[in-house]
Every structure is written in structure tokens, then in C-alpha cells.
Figure 1 (cartoon, one colour):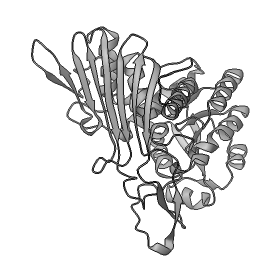
Figure 2 (figure 1 turned 135 degrees about the vertical axis):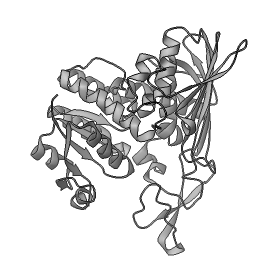
Figure 3 (figure 1 turned 30 degrees about the vertical axis):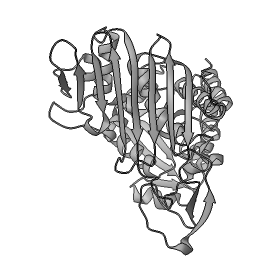
Length: 381
């Protein structure tokens, strides 16, 4: 097994999750991190040998096999381009970029240089999501009639909650759907084997202004602010969106994405209705997959590799009865990505590539246009 050198750019909440998951693989050394203006402090905090303020200096000096990009969305394009032009494989956080045009350029660059590339759509990698995919692929669910679900959070519930994700010049034009709705539709399309062809969306911004901190506040920190610590700023990105979908097999779908839903910290759900049975999965009960039948008993399929289909069993790290969740999806995703890098395999497998990142950007673009124009909008291929 090859031993890899990896670097991470951006060491906030998600960058730290990447570092932890990479260490669990056993054959990856995280040799350096880059984070402005505190690269050295971030490296020390996460027991990484070296820290840089400048990502280019880090990549030029360390010459890693792989770089993980965990920075605000507007910086992804430049960083991924620089890495690929220097022959470095890229794992990028979602969304891939802030525009469809930039995403297309990254896909073209990856093909030009033959670089293995990935987007961290980790929600595909829950074992019971893989079990859903396997059951649909082998026909147990039958023809899919409908798909609906939600992604609910409350980390932006208060007007004092603030993040760079609220700023379109950094995050992109869509916030709620671009940030977490992209996870939902990628998970559903990959599990159900469907592609949305047309969308109808409705956006809402409940906090028209928010209190922006005048000093750094980490994501999910819950830090309390005094009046002198913030400035009132207008908000142009959505807190909430509801989207209707038409899928390529004739199925219909819907989802609700809400970042101001009190009491739900990070809940993703989907309900898939088929001609043979229906399936329901909930990330807050992620180790069970519910199966519903008209004639016969309903059941729950537990996360047990001895009971699951081979595809789902392969992404279990532990025996039945041993709970796996969010951090394990990163580990399984990165395990597949690094195996592809070792083989030099640039074909599309189970993990999301830049092409999938482009797909989500195209979907998001159609959803934004639909919300503005109040009509069904076709999704460009």
C-alpha cells in the first residue's frame, strides 16, 4: 500500500474533520496545513508538523501527493487550478466553485492533466445510504414514483448567528441550497440513480439583517456577542428553500432546506416511494434504514455488514451494533479516493468527482433562476 503525503488548506471545523479522517486511513501523513493568518498556530493545534500562511508556498515546498481544499467557496477555483497545474490530486469541499463556468474549467483541467479529483459529498457514504443504492440498483424497490425529504439545521436560527456563508461574494449566490441542499440532492441522485431534469424553487430570507461580528467567531462556536462586538448588515442569501423536482424516469420529488429550524442541529432525511416498497432514512437515526410495504410487514434494516448488500457492507468499519456516523463517512470517502489515486484511476466510481461538483453547480444555478422567475426551469446537462 502506498504511503501518501497530504496537505490541507483551511483548518476550520471541516478542515479539522478532514485531518482526523485522513489519519484514520493509516497510510496518509498530513505533513502541513495552510491557513491565513494563523497557519503555524493551526498546525500546532492539530499536531501537524508544519503550518503556512500561504497555500502556494506550502504546495511548492511540501510537494504533496494530495491537497484537501477546505476554505470558503470563492477560493476553491484558484486553489484547485494551482494544485492540478502542479500535478497534485485534489479533494475539494462543496460546492466546487461559485459559478458554473469555473466548475466547467476545473473539470476540463482535471481531464487535461489526468488528475484524480473529488468533491467531498460525504453523505453518500453512510452505509444505509449505500444500502438504499444497492436495493434500487438490483430492483427490489421497483420503479421509483417519488422522492421527498429535508435538510434542517438551526445554527443560523438567531440574527446574531453569523458566518462567511452568509456573504454571496464569498459563498456564492445561493446559501442554504448551495451549502446543504447540494448534499441532499447529490445523495438522492446517487442513491436512487435518478437525475433531476426540471426544478421549481421558492426561497425565503427570514433575517433580513444580521449582526456581523467585528472579531473572529468559529463556525458552530455559539459565542455570545455584546452590542459593541457586531455591526448590522443586510442579508441577501436564503435561510430557507423549497424545491420541486421532475426526474428523468418520470418520478417527482421535493425537498425543504432550512438553516433556521430550531432544535434540528444537522438532520438529513429522504423518503423514496417505489412500486414494490418504500424506503426512509434519517441521519439522526443513521444506522437504520426503514422499509415500508403495502402487503407484508414493515422492517428496519440495521447497519450490520453481515446483513447488508456487499456494496453497503464494504463501507462499514465496524460490526453490527457498533454505531457509525458523520466522521466515518469522511473516512470511507477518502479511502475510496486515495485508492483511486494509488491506481491512477480517473474514471468515475462511487465517490463524487469534479463532474459531480459541476452537476450540483448546474442544478443550483437552475434552482436560483427558478426562485427568481417563479417558474419551472430545465436543468442544463
